[in-house]
Image (cartoon, rainbow, N blue to C red):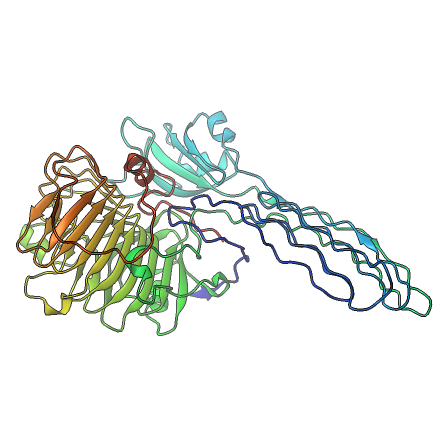
Length: 533
């Protein structure tokens, strides 16, 4: 059954969408109160290193020499707690008490050494994850358990490499093959802070004794573990013209689902919602209504079917961190007449797709037609897992005669990966303004960017490991422009005609860093992340 779940409260800074990219330290935990009993010191800083707030100020009334407020000292993960001096007593001559502040808790990083000690190959590690390969049919549950962690993804190992073979479906954590790739995650928790001591002030003659308050204990073990945050800012075209907020940011009211019927019921309700999807396989079609955020909580969330975001009443939709696999089709005509793995159109607008793995769409992997607008697709892997005839990945507008799309189809593709078996449409389109930013193309296909009627496309700081020119004139385009692109393809930085002004702020990643970032098994493109909560 669908169950709202009260999740642990987290304090999260605005982060770049790039998988929990580090932020700079900031100041400003809450200051202590200005009450007659003196403010309490702020608790320790967040994992990004906030400085604790100041202690309380002098009381509104009372004797001379009230105690001064303490200062919070911010640390890292999560920092030390603040100290707060007690306020002076109320009345005549009360002297302020003093209070030692609590010490903030600590968070212990995961220890991957148990995996190597058990004889498995450690491929990568981070403060929250271990990634490893076994070669003895142990299964990923056993590999992760060796480090006291849980398996969040099991995949077939890429031949000759310490990496997941993303061209194949994931396998079960509890069973697998002779050699599989495992992603393990967890937290060894934290230790709580120690409480402060209370040294009360003496009341003066005729006064009331109001002693200084002890410092609050530090908050231990509260650092969120994971790559994605519910507060990650929406990038690209989905961020303008009112923006995209989905179901909001209150994880405490989120709905957690683990069956397709629960997911469909929550997504198709008329109320705004955050829907957290547990790892597993979900068969069927998902058609979310407006004001929804749908997030896979870890790798291993797969929809066997399709996602359809369609209709002018459908807007403000966020879908993150899951995989979509279209049903198999057997011939060119059958595939062409089939459904897209993900479809946006018929007036749907303000949609953010992030960290998706989209493969095997019958007609297309992810098409936007019929007036779809203000769309951002980020950190998404487009590919096919078998050699079907119709491998046309991304279509923008389905015809030169599509009046609903004139002046619309404003789309950003950023940090995406077009890979295995994609033959064309990376994308191919008409009418829209399309910004390609920091993407990686290594398909060996027959067409990369097909720029058609009244369309303009900007490709910026992308990498093309292809053997052909990246531009194809599909008839009457407004123009295209290549900026800072690298790779083996031809004409990568050519310009033609006119393009458009990009209406949002962004910072391009250097093209030299794109391939490593996009193909990383730790929150690179695809269903590769964990949600922090």
